[in-house]
Every structure is written in structure tokens, then in C-alpha cells.
Image (cartoon, rainbow, N blue to C red; front, side):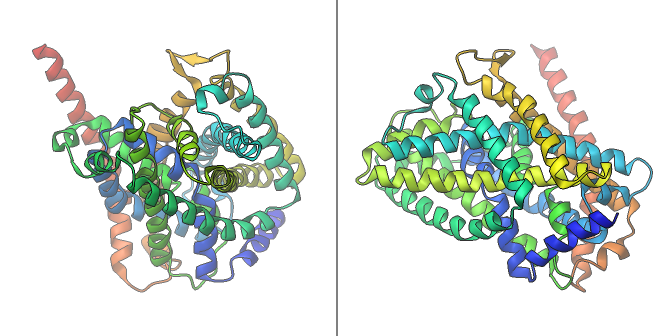
Length: 445
């Protein structure tokens, strides 16, 4: 228990104000979810229809749950497991389930972070390749191992320097992305990209699968149900206005995700590529882009270097959630917990890494990484986020949450508890309706 309070106090000193908390949280969260995952999920799910569903999910459901998780972490001042232990009963067991979800996501997240490292080194050598050529050998595995060991080294020595550096690097990344959006606007595919964003096939909004992906991406982007928010919530200063801080972070995250789409899809259409080509979309498109741009070699170094910084910082944040839980719950030293977690990551992540090597590890014909991302980064985190919100809202009295929201406006409390308590019932109702619709459609056929 003393070690837990020591860890929390040290972390809290890093974020002495609300702007510092917002900058730290945004810096840790801006990464692959925005720049890599959002465009490819959007490409596979109909463009504009997906954006509409995503924004609805974000504003109506995900934002209140985000505020709730941060508030619960602030109330507990402990790890993810400690946060859910507040609900009593099997709360601690559920807290470990959340940690396991983060383990699954981080295991393949480190693989993709390794890709960004490999692309950075290739750009520095002037040998940038499309993803098919990059993954022709065992680069995916080797760079995953290097990235994991590097992350373990940083966590063992402390991450404050990386977090402070990220606050400088993230604005630089945004500048590069905005510049690429401008370049994209000059391409022949800009008009087709605008249609892809703004021409909404409203009939697709009746698809349960589309809403599943939209909610999954919204939960993924804002790290719902993964322990990040509860952990960061335990670090923030007392006077922080939680709703305002969370809205700011959500706005930054969503803006960068949409910019990533505007950056990539004009080039996708200009090169005659398919928007629904899956997880390698950005890594197939951007090397071709930099090859065509004046000064593209230097721009590639800057972009992939900053892309790696964003992904690596997010990887550290995920690993911190796991390491904090392992260290506090098993009373291990930080070094021992880091070593244990790194070993688990190397074992689990290798399956995802090997799916993009000549071995081509597959599950039902699909790369292991894509399957884990679709399941753990979609259905599982939706279940985790919805269940966690229900536990917190049904078993923690509203007046306790009210004490840490940092606002006297009862509207936020009302909205949080309305979503947290009754969303699970709506989800069950939706599943029943979708099942009935599918059964009816099958009978007619």
C-alpha cells in the first residue's frame, strides 16, 4: 500500500495543473488509434456513414464514460485493479479483466510501433518501401522485439523525460499531418475523398456491424475500458474540472483522427488503391506519397520519426497500466514488474508479429494481428467499457463521484449515471433486435 501511494504521488507531481494533465493525457493517447487505426477502420466501413456513427457514439455515450473512468481513478488514487475494487465483491476480478484487455491490445500495438521504427530507419537510409516489401522478411518480428525491449528499458528507468518530450513532439506531428492534408488537397483524388467523407449511405446506419465498429473505434480512441483513464485519473490535481478536461482531450483526439483520414484517402484514390485494404493501409500509402513529394525524403524522416514517438509514448502508457497493477497487487518492485510484463509481451506479441512475415500466421485466413485488433480493439473493449461503467455507477454512490468532478453542475453527474446505469440494458436490447432481424432475413432466404 505504501508503494502504491508513493507511485501515485510521484506521478501526480508531473501534472500540477489542468493544462498539464490535458497535455499529458493527449500526448499519451495520440498515436496509432488516430493515425493508423481510424483511417483503415473507416476505409473498411463505408466512409461517411462510419464517421456519422463514430461521432454519435463519441458524443452520446463514450464521453460520459470517459469522464466516469477518470473520476473513479481520481477517487481511488490507485491502479486499475484498485479503482474497480471500490465497487466491492468481484470488482478486483473485473479490474484484472481490464488489465488483461490492455495486455492483448498492447501486445499487437508494440508490433505496429515496431513498424513505425522500421519505417523511420528506412526513411533515414533513403530506402522507404511499401508495406508488402517491408514485411517480406522478418522485419515485423525484429522491430517488435527491439521496441518491446526499448520500452522495458525506459519503464525501468522512468518515463518522465519521454512524457515531457512528447509534449514537444506531438505538436510537431500535428504540423506535419496538416501539411500532408494540404498536399493531399492538391491531388486528383481530393474530390473522391470528399465524396467518401461527406456522401453518407444512410441505409448503412441500420447495420449493427457498422455501429459495432464505430463504438469500438470510439472506445479505442479514448482508451475506454482499458485502464488508461483510471490510471491517469489517479494522477490529476484536485482542482481539475474533469468534464472540461475530458472534452478537450476528446476534441484533440477526434480532430487528429479525422485529419489522418483527410491525409491518407486523397492519396489512396489518386494512386488507384482500395480504401478497405486493412491494417496496412497507412504503410502502403505513405511511402508512395513521400516518393512523389518534393523533399519527400526529409518529410518521411520527420513524419515516421514523430509517428514512432507518438506510438511509442502510447505503448508506454499501456505498459504503465499493466506494470502498475502487477507491481501493486503482487507487491513487486518496479524492475521486477517491468521484467515480467516485458516477457509476457514478447511471447504474446510474437504471434501478431509473425503474421506479417514469410510464416504468415493466420486465424481463419486472416492475419493474427488483424483478428486480435478486431476482437480486443472492438467487441471486447465495448464490453469492458460498458460493464465497467455499470459497475461504477451502480455500486459507487453519485455523491462520491460528484466530489471529484471538479464542478457543481449536476447535469454532468446526471448524464454520467444515466449512461452508465442504463447503457448495458440498451446494449442487450440491441443485440436481441439484431439477432431477430438476422433470423428473419435468414428465414426469407
